[in-house]
Image (tube, rainbow, N blue to C red; front, side, top):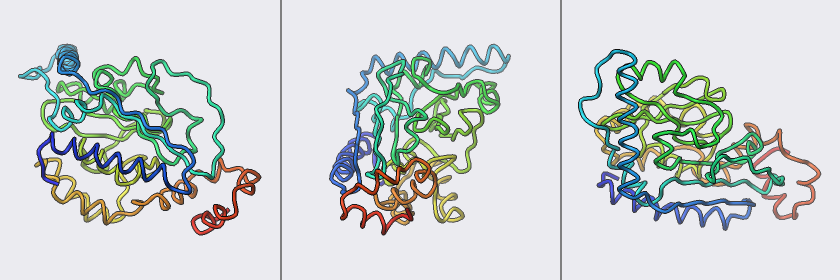
Length: 296
């Protein structure tokens, strides 16, 4: 998959359409929400870049350190993605759960996962490009800019902002600097961050797609069954932006089918939210299918 940024972005959204259709047509999936936004304009992208660069200058002045030598510009892969869709949201849950009517509490019209969404097996909420520059208008649980991780980056003019609000307890943030921005993973309501392996925008998005946006697979890092083999490959991809081996790495991973994502979600925490009385009322064919995946 070593292709140019525009070709990658177009390919991604084509494959995304197929993934959404697979979820919508799956016998164990009850609800799918899909929000693809209008693409970001060149003006919107330029305004976000200017805002980020102004903040980079400000933080380096505050720390009395050297400012970036050139104005900030987004990585080409990220830029081409946002030109197709300025933000992206997908969430879904299986027939195991009877979704309760939720109270709308968003500060914006863009959905961010809340505690009442914790039962859902799949969720991704990639912030619009203006949110990468300043997430204050989005209803997120904390502020990664005031963590130790972000403060260390500030000194060199590297900003650290929300990127994916996929869970109320976990999240993913992006480091903003000229070059290939990396992704770090949040824990404990955005109180702490870590990067257990190399990860950039393309790797993150392809991984999310390959696992049907599994929340569990992205919590505190991307789950790979063969870490000692995969991690060096990821590091090389981030450094070279050559993603030719990424497809094969993802195919060899676990939880790349809907059934296994449902089983993993139930095993890790879904069992806490399941209603046995509700599940008993499911059609017999569905209950038999579920019995092959989970222990009720």
